[in-house]
Length: 406
Image (cartoon, rainbow, N blue to C red; front, side, top):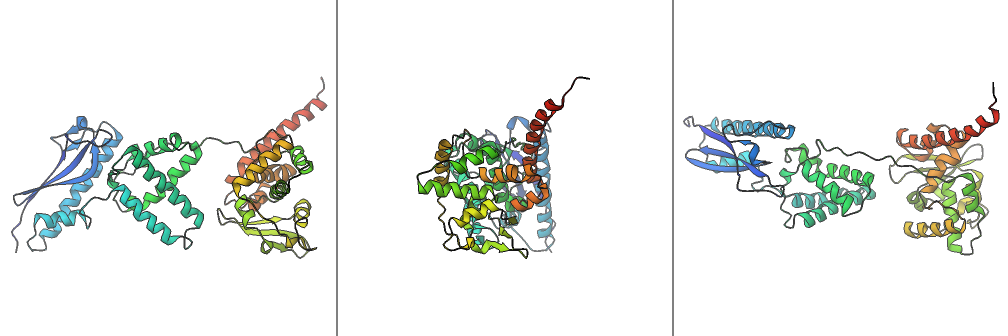
């Protein structure tokens, strides 16, 4: 039976080494059977806040306290591993002890390496349990992170375990400034980045959650829409270009149905159903969310489809949907011809359906939410607020009519 042996553990701050933030790495020093080995913990600190006697950070901030808690976990893990090996009764070397303590990965993984692995995993899951659009979103964010590493850390040698809120905050700043991405979109990208890192966080590879304490706020966005007068202007404007007329008709069709551009692109006869009373409706799952939309086809929408039908049955419509960029370019020209001051873009049709076509005409918000394919009423609420404001302004005119002096 192996003689009871002792191990000495201590944490040290390598004060002569620094990361890009000017912080020094913390290492776990192991002394066993006359050998000494230093293991990088993946944690960094301000050397001025390090207490060399205690081997811990001074508790002057929440971050330091959190870091100390992680050091305690590493310490107890090392003791546990040592005890497990010791009580097996077989000799073991310092290298074997360190190997078990580190796990299989002797070399700490770099963030860039991890991201490359995630690219492979995400591509393998494409259209199996992740939609093509979601895969594109993940890969876009990973590309942004790699570009961020290239522009700010030329050698890309950022350890995965070292990620913290500083890195995430700097990445957000990069998205807003270098990439010129809006606040709300940048926050959504940070959310996707969190999802990409989730396996590493759950497995404890990233020891300090890089999103903890990160405070980002969405800015309220006004959802613009077309009024009945503006819709009429678009309907009656003379367009001598067949390409623009087709774009106008497709835009108006979505104003009367609430379809998004990608759903219009996929829209075909199979999505039009006939009810028992002879009326027609659209039944289609939204590409973006997978939520099913059921939208009654009203007369203006059917009339538009009839103009593109190759037979008396409007369901046999045949039209070409241009690229999103071409459509939006065409809408800007149409807006100029129709003398509409608002900048026309295709998604405006969906907003118009939610406000002018439905909510303003007394359609219950629950029904509107279902037609839009929203997963919750919260997504539809901002349209209701716009309509409430519209009604409030209209009631001011009523108030003037009936105002009398008492």
